[in-house]
Image (cartoon, rainbow, N blue to C red):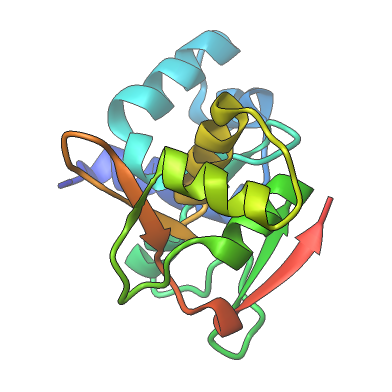
Length: 161
């Protein structure tokens, strides 16, 4: 995705201020309201931000890389610190690795259940999307979406929330 100068400048604000709120960006960007901020994020920066578990706006690892910065969730040694729910943590433990055949949502659901949790399929789907937003898993575009880790398991430090 090619970014305009304005979009790059605003993405730099997201990287600098993260985690941040619509109101903070509204003030910085001199917008009328939080809805305008949300609309801009979705239309111009959709691939470069996500909302964390507290609904705060964070830059993706790719956004930080655009500016030559370590992602905010970096451990400083090439690894990544991930805040994750118990379900997300279980998914990270059982999902296919970066070089393995990706898994469907249902396959991940069964693996998580085999590991001792009993989530609903919609909860697994949502957790996979959140992990994908954080750059921890990648979604492989197929007729049926499949997922696998985007990074090596040992490069992650999980902080359960």
